[in-house]
Image 1: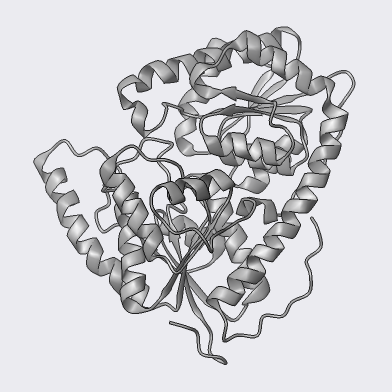
Image 2 (image 1 turned 90 degrees about the vertical axis):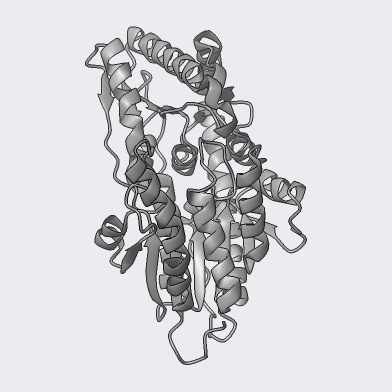
Length: 410
């Protein structure tokens, strides 16, 4: 349904928000910033994974995404299995009732159309399908804004994702491979556009400058076990990733370089602990970021960054710091290419510490040049996102007055 001119639009935001993933929350923050800027009269609430955290941090009402509280825990007992099964049925009605109370529902960024990390079809893909189907039936406009997508091997997951995309009223993607993946899944993407990730619209601290002698290196780590298709060798992949990353950190410390470990999700704490146990040195410290803004501050203060999680990469690039990606999906490679650092990607599945060190040294040798490149690419990303928000307003709020002054580049 279209908001009536003169009445506040009822806007919902949806996703695994407030659940400990800083990238997801950063995408939410970007969309809330857009709504405050362009549609300050809108009444906003959320259906999300961590409603208490979302309400506390962003000041909007929030409802729990799933009726069954143990949705993302492995169900081994009969009671848990029954609870999950009942939850799937109850969530049909809960989701439909929530969607009907809105004119517009925005799914802010995130990799909601991909399975580059382990994912069960009856978890979030099912929840997204319920949302999009409820929107189509009720007339609420469901918008997938700046989302990520990737080829999906599991048939059930692929079917749910394809139909979610088809039922959405609006789609845009954070990179070209995402749009290509949806086209390959049979979704008509003729009108779908590609824009930089929503997190590039967030304000960043002033860009730093390399120190002399060489200063701190931020290493963003991840509890990486491969993709949804890698379940059979997940532990092998994780061990190789951890061993290679640990050896890289140890070498930097032996050279006298301070290393700052950062995470992007609560689950990454186990990797931090393993590295600290293996590299016992006061030169290795740990950051505890609570937001993407915190990650940007950490990366802005570093000479260089080596990171795995997608939104940790974005924070480092947005901060203007030369960055090397431990890449686990096409989205990381596309992001690095977009920002002019495509040569500095290293496979997270097969971390080779010696090769990683050679790439890192080349990155640092080109530091001054790469900082200029990043400054230019960041300005361009902000302009593109301003255009994205203009088009989003035209698509979702055509009855409202949405003229605005151009934003200043952060």
